[in-house]
Image 1 (spheres, rainbow, N blue to C red):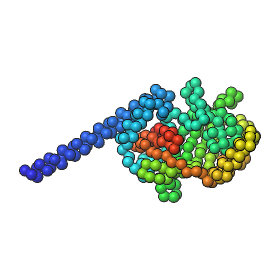
Image 2 (image 1 turned 135 degrees about the vertical axis):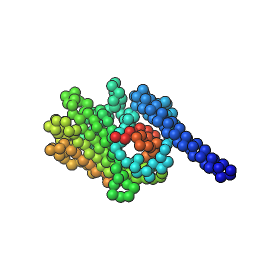
Image 3 (image 1 turned 180 degrees about the horizontal axis):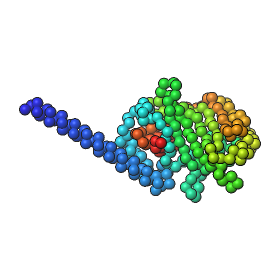
Image 4 (image 1 turned 180 degrees about the vertical axis):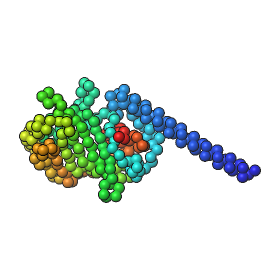
Length: 270
Protein backbone atom coordinates (compact mmCIF):
# COMPACT_ATOMS: atom_id res chain seq x y z
CA UNK A 1 0.00 0.00 0.00
CA UNK A 2 2.72 2.47 1.02
CA UNK A 3 4.73 1.63 -2.09
CA UNK A 4 1.72 2.27 -4.31
CA UNK A 5 1.14 5.61 -2.59
CA UNK A 6 4.78 6.65 -3.20
CA UNK A 7 4.55 5.71 -6.88
CA UNK A 8 1.25 7.59 -7.22
CA UNK A 9 2.77 10.68 -5.59
CA UNK A 10 5.80 10.60 -7.89
CA UNK A 11 3.60 10.17 -10.93
CA UNK A 12 1.45 13.11 -9.85
CA UNK A 13 4.55 15.29 -9.38
CA UNK A 14 5.89 14.32 -12.78
CA UNK A 15 2.54 15.08 -14.39
CA UNK A 16 2.36 18.46 -12.67
CA UNK A 17 5.93 19.30 -13.73
CA UNK A 18 5.20 18.26 -17.30
CA UNK A 19 2.04 20.38 -17.35
CA UNK A 20 3.98 23.35 -15.95
CA UNK A 21 6.58 23.04 -18.70
CA UNK A 22 3.91 22.82 -21.38
CA UNK A 23 2.08 25.80 -19.93
CA UNK A 24 5.32 27.83 -19.83
CA UNK A 25 6.13 26.95 -23.42
CA UNK A 26 2.61 27.86 -24.51
CA UNK A 27 2.85 31.18 -22.65
CA UNK A 28 6.20 31.95 -24.29
CA UNK A 29 4.88 31.20 -27.76
CA UNK A 30 1.84 33.41 -27.19
CA UNK A 31 4.03 36.24 -25.90
CA UNK A 32 6.44 35.92 -28.83
CA UNK A 33 3.54 36.16 -31.29
CA UNK A 34 2.21 39.15 -29.35
CA UNK A 35 5.66 40.77 -29.45
CA UNK A 36 5.91 40.42 -33.22
CA UNK A 37 2.42 41.84 -33.63
CA UNK A 38 3.14 44.74 -31.27
CA UNK A 39 6.35 45.59 -33.13
CA UNK A 40 4.41 45.62 -36.40
CA UNK A 41 1.69 47.81 -34.91
CA UNK A 42 4.08 50.27 -33.30
CA UNK A 43 6.61 50.68 -36.15
CA UNK A 44 9.11 48.32 -34.54
CA UNK A 45 9.67 50.65 -31.60
CA UNK A 46 10.99 48.64 -28.61
CA UNK A 47 10.36 51.67 -26.37
CA UNK A 48 6.59 51.58 -26.80
CA UNK A 49 4.85 50.70 -23.51
CA UNK A 50 3.01 47.73 -25.03
CA UNK A 51 6.25 46.30 -26.39
CA UNK A 52 8.09 46.92 -23.11
CA UNK A 53 5.41 45.06 -21.16
CA UNK A 54 5.60 42.02 -23.42
CA UNK A 55 9.40 41.95 -23.23
CA UNK A 56 9.29 42.15 -19.45
CA UNK A 57 6.86 39.22 -19.33
CA UNK A 58 8.99 37.21 -21.74
CA UNK A 59 12.08 37.86 -19.61
CA UNK A 60 10.38 36.25 -16.63
CA UNK A 61 9.80 33.12 -18.74
CA UNK A 62 13.28 33.01 -20.26
CA UNK A 63 13.96 29.28 -20.83
CA UNK A 64 17.75 29.82 -20.91
CA UNK A 65 18.93 30.85 -17.42
CA UNK A 66 22.62 31.09 -18.39
CA UNK A 67 22.47 32.36 -21.99
CA UNK A 68 26.10 33.49 -22.24
CA UNK A 69 27.16 29.91 -21.51
CA UNK A 70 24.65 28.23 -23.84
CA UNK A 71 26.57 28.22 -27.11
CA UNK A 72 24.07 26.12 -29.08
CA UNK A 73 21.52 28.92 -28.68
CA UNK A 74 23.86 31.90 -28.50
CA UNK A 75 25.57 31.17 -31.83
CA UNK A 76 23.90 31.95 -35.13
CA UNK A 77 23.05 34.70 -37.58
CA UNK A 78 20.62 37.06 -35.87
CA UNK A 79 18.48 39.59 -37.74
CA UNK A 80 17.11 42.70 -36.05
CA UNK A 81 13.29 42.78 -36.19
CA UNK A 82 12.80 45.79 -33.94
CA UNK A 83 13.45 49.21 -35.43
CA UNK A 84 17.13 50.25 -35.79
CA UNK A 85 16.75 53.03 -33.23
CA UNK A 86 20.29 54.15 -32.49
CA UNK A 87 21.47 57.58 -31.30
CA UNK A 88 21.29 60.45 -33.83
CA UNK A 89 18.98 58.63 -36.21
CA UNK A 90 15.91 59.95 -38.02
CA UNK A 91 12.72 58.13 -38.84
CA UNK A 92 11.48 58.80 -42.38
CA UNK A 93 7.89 59.01 -43.59
CA UNK A 94 7.98 55.43 -44.93
CA UNK A 95 9.03 54.06 -41.53
CA UNK A 96 12.69 53.49 -42.38
CA UNK A 97 15.57 55.07 -40.47
CA UNK A 98 18.43 57.12 -41.82
CA UNK A 99 21.82 57.99 -40.35
CA UNK A 100 24.98 59.66 -41.48
CA UNK A 101 27.69 57.29 -42.63
CA UNK A 102 29.94 58.70 -39.92
CA UNK A 103 27.44 57.81 -37.20
CA UNK A 104 27.32 54.18 -38.33
CA UNK A 105 31.07 53.61 -38.11
CA UNK A 106 32.87 55.74 -35.51
CA UNK A 107 33.27 58.60 -38.04
CA UNK A 108 35.94 56.60 -39.84
CA UNK A 109 34.50 56.51 -43.37
CA UNK A 110 34.17 59.53 -45.64
CA UNK A 111 32.06 61.39 -46.48
CA UNK A 112 30.93 61.37 -42.87
CA UNK A 113 27.83 63.44 -43.60
CA UNK A 114 26.57 61.13 -46.35
CA UNK A 115 22.97 60.14 -45.50
CA UNK A 116 22.21 56.41 -45.72
CA UNK A 117 18.91 54.60 -45.14
CA UNK A 118 19.06 51.34 -43.20
CA UNK A 119 17.48 48.34 -44.92
CA UNK A 120 18.32 45.57 -42.47
CA UNK A 121 20.71 44.76 -39.64
CA UNK A 122 22.32 41.39 -38.92
CA UNK A 123 24.56 40.13 -36.16
CA UNK A 124 26.52 36.93 -36.82
CA UNK A 125 27.65 35.37 -33.54
CA UNK A 126 30.27 32.69 -34.23
CA UNK A 127 32.92 30.89 -32.15
CA UNK A 128 36.50 32.18 -32.33
CA UNK A 129 39.79 30.46 -31.57
CA UNK A 130 40.02 31.74 -28.01
CA UNK A 131 37.74 29.73 -25.68
CA UNK A 132 34.41 31.43 -24.86
CA UNK A 133 35.15 34.27 -27.29
CA UNK A 134 32.77 34.95 -30.16
CA UNK A 135 32.27 37.40 -32.98
CA UNK A 136 29.99 40.32 -32.26
CA UNK A 137 29.84 42.00 -35.67
CA UNK A 138 27.07 44.47 -36.46
CA UNK A 139 26.26 44.27 -40.17
CA UNK A 140 24.17 47.12 -41.55
CA UNK A 141 22.82 46.95 -45.10
CA UNK A 142 21.94 50.40 -46.43
CA UNK A 143 20.96 52.37 -49.50
CA UNK A 144 22.51 55.76 -50.20
CA UNK A 145 19.94 58.55 -49.88
CA UNK A 146 21.05 60.50 -52.94
CA UNK A 147 18.65 61.50 -55.75
CA UNK A 148 21.29 60.94 -58.42
CA UNK A 149 22.23 57.47 -57.14
CA UNK A 150 19.00 55.89 -55.89
CA UNK A 151 20.19 52.31 -56.40
CA UNK A 152 23.58 52.46 -54.70
CA UNK A 153 23.54 49.96 -51.86
CA UNK A 154 26.28 48.92 -49.47
CA UNK A 155 27.18 47.41 -46.13
CA UNK A 156 28.89 48.74 -43.04
CA UNK A 157 30.31 45.94 -40.91
CA UNK A 158 31.46 46.97 -37.44
CA UNK A 159 33.77 44.15 -36.36
CA UNK A 160 33.42 43.11 -32.74
CA UNK A 161 34.17 40.36 -30.25
CA UNK A 162 32.40 39.30 -27.09
CA UNK A 163 32.81 36.94 -24.15
CA UNK A 164 30.82 36.16 -21.00
CA UNK A 165 31.06 38.66 -18.16
CA UNK A 166 28.42 36.77 -16.17
CA UNK A 167 25.71 34.21 -16.83
CA UNK A 168 23.52 36.84 -18.49
CA UNK A 169 25.93 39.62 -19.53
CA UNK A 170 28.39 39.71 -22.44
CA UNK A 171 31.47 41.90 -22.48
CA UNK A 172 31.70 43.51 -25.92
CA UNK A 173 34.37 45.46 -27.75
CA UNK A 174 34.94 46.49 -31.36
CA UNK A 175 38.10 45.91 -33.37
CA UNK A 176 37.50 47.75 -36.62
CA UNK A 177 35.16 48.15 -39.54
CA UNK A 178 34.54 47.52 -43.22
CA UNK A 179 32.61 49.49 -45.83
CA UNK A 180 31.81 47.77 -49.12
CA UNK A 181 29.23 47.90 -51.92
CA UNK A 182 26.42 45.40 -52.40
CA UNK A 183 26.87 42.86 -55.18
CA UNK A 184 24.49 44.65 -57.57
CA UNK A 185 25.86 48.17 -56.97
CA UNK A 186 27.54 49.99 -59.83
CA UNK A 187 31.19 49.94 -58.78
CA UNK A 188 32.13 52.95 -60.90
CA UNK A 189 29.46 55.10 -59.24
CA UNK A 190 30.43 53.74 -55.82
CA UNK A 191 34.10 54.56 -56.30
CA UNK A 192 33.22 58.03 -57.53
CA UNK A 193 31.62 58.77 -54.15
CA UNK A 194 34.17 57.14 -51.86
CA UNK A 195 37.59 57.23 -53.53
CA UNK A 196 37.66 61.01 -53.79
CA UNK A 197 36.33 61.66 -50.31
CA UNK A 198 38.62 63.70 -48.12
CA UNK A 199 38.84 63.99 -44.37
CA UNK A 200 36.43 66.61 -43.06
CA UNK A 201 37.63 70.02 -42.04
CA UNK A 202 36.99 70.57 -38.35
CA UNK A 203 34.79 73.55 -37.65
CA UNK A 204 36.49 74.37 -34.35
CA UNK A 205 39.49 73.60 -32.17
CA UNK A 206 37.11 71.61 -29.96
CA UNK A 207 36.20 69.30 -32.87
CA UNK A 208 39.87 68.81 -33.70
CA UNK A 209 40.74 67.99 -30.08
CA UNK A 210 37.86 65.51 -29.80
CA UNK A 211 38.94 63.81 -33.01
CA UNK A 212 42.52 63.46 -31.79
CA UNK A 213 41.40 62.16 -28.38
CA UNK A 214 39.26 59.48 -30.02
CA UNK A 215 42.17 58.31 -32.13
CA UNK A 216 44.44 58.25 -29.09
CA UNK A 217 41.97 56.55 -26.73
CA UNK A 218 40.65 53.93 -29.14
CA UNK A 219 43.81 53.34 -31.13
CA UNK A 220 41.95 54.16 -34.33
CA UNK A 221 43.88 53.40 -37.48
CA UNK A 222 42.25 55.39 -40.33
CA UNK A 223 41.25 53.59 -43.53
CA UNK A 224 43.75 53.22 -46.32
CA UNK A 225 42.79 54.02 -49.89
CA UNK A 226 39.74 52.34 -51.35
CA UNK A 227 40.25 49.07 -53.20
CA UNK A 228 39.07 50.17 -56.64
CA UNK A 229 38.50 46.59 -57.78
CA UNK A 230 36.12 45.76 -54.92
CA UNK A 231 35.10 49.16 -53.49
CA UNK A 232 36.13 47.92 -50.04
CA UNK A 233 37.50 50.22 -47.32
CA UNK A 234 38.69 49.12 -43.85
CA UNK A 235 39.84 50.60 -40.56
CA UNK A 236 41.19 49.17 -37.30
CA UNK A 237 40.44 49.92 -33.67
CA UNK A 238 43.27 48.70 -31.44
CA UNK A 239 42.06 49.92 -28.04
CA UNK A 240 38.32 49.71 -28.11
CA UNK A 241 36.45 50.49 -24.89
CA UNK A 242 34.68 47.50 -23.39
CA UNK A 243 30.91 47.61 -23.15
CA UNK A 244 28.29 45.22 -21.84
CA UNK A 245 25.19 43.60 -23.29
CA UNK A 246 22.53 41.95 -21.12
CA UNK A 247 20.63 39.03 -22.63
CA UNK A 248 17.02 39.33 -21.47
CA UNK A 249 15.65 36.39 -23.43
CA UNK A 250 17.11 33.60 -25.58
CA UNK A 251 15.67 30.52 -27.22
CA UNK A 252 15.88 28.66 -30.53
CA UNK A 253 14.37 31.51 -32.55
CA UNK A 254 14.38 34.75 -30.56
CA UNK A 255 16.96 36.88 -28.73
CA UNK A 256 16.29 40.08 -26.79
CA UNK A 257 19.18 42.17 -25.45
CA UNK A 258 19.66 45.46 -23.61
CA UNK A 259 22.78 47.59 -24.04
CA UNK A 260 24.45 50.00 -21.65
CA UNK A 261 22.40 52.90 -22.99
CA UNK A 262 19.22 50.91 -22.34
CA UNK A 263 18.80 50.26 -26.06
CA UNK A 264 16.72 47.11 -26.50
CA UNK A 265 17.21 44.97 -29.61
CA UNK A 266 14.86 42.17 -30.66
CA UNK A 267 16.42 39.69 -33.08
CA UNK A 268 15.28 36.52 -34.85
CA UNK A 269 17.55 33.67 -35.89
CA UNK A 270 18.13 33.40 -39.65
